[in-house]
Image (cartoon, rainbow, N blue to C red):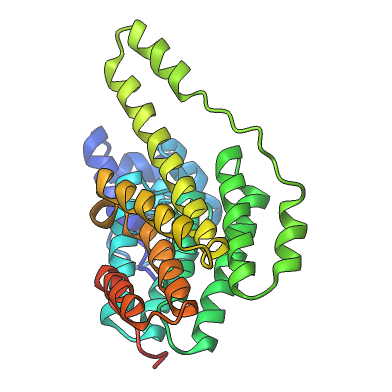
Length: 303
């Protein structure tokens, strides 16, 4: 369990605001010795005093406790990169435990939960032990369901639902996936160009670029998923199969996906390899699997 750093925070706030131990003690109705013990971590304030201390320093109780319920996009990206690397360099149990610890600490940071769930799903195809794969997929489903139930962002909830459906498919629970998705919705609309135009006309070029970059990324993710799925459908039609591959590879190169977003490419390479295996083309199967393993390595076992 992470050590509480209430004392350090009290000292920091006191010094920043020019408050003495006597000042704080008088406000809280305790002795100066009590404040001194808080600051040296000899003892902690009674839980009922925490809101009053936080209010006195104009901070939140979370800040007083040193608890950060949310992570920035940069922190999430860095954490996911490290967690992904853990699956490649450490045992399954150790790598998984580190994911669980971060999840428990930031259980209300839904963008992080989404990324961890996606990490579980992508690595489920890289383990030989089916029990390990099932654990990852089942835990991913739990995270995606939590997002759908508690998150406020509509797009994130929709993405989590789609990811849950994918996990169900990987677990051969297609009926549940269909029930979850309901009827297909082809009313695909995008407001990013409108937002970008409005920002550009307002002179906010940076915002215009940002929203278009986000939109492009989201659409690339959707397109790669669709292409990977379509490959399975046209695996027995060489012309369409090769044409679909060419389009996907062009997109991977155009957006540098292997370098910038390898998790998007994992399902595609796996789908291609499976199709070649189905066609009994062992040479091509091995060639694509080399691309697949080059992106993320290979986790050999649970232990």
